[in-house]
Length: 121
Image (cartoon, rainbow, N blue to C red):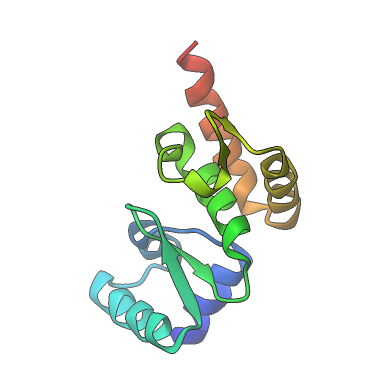
């Protein structure tokens, strides 16, 4: 189960617990147990108030960009490292583009969050 979780998080970084449960069809308690083991060993880490999980080899700044991409506008306050004043820093664009190009699963989140943003106009 650990290998399955780690493989999934490496292929598609930034899932939250319930999302992992759905995508892996695993019992919540079992998933929580193995995530805790992986966290303790330093193979993964988590970010955010609604924790999302990332492989340890992923740069934390890129992980914050993915967190922002997957959470959408509600994550702007938490993504403080990505902000330059009231705007996102210029390098965030490149991080987001690189992330979307590298991880196909992030494209779905990008479209969903774009639709949310457009509905707010």
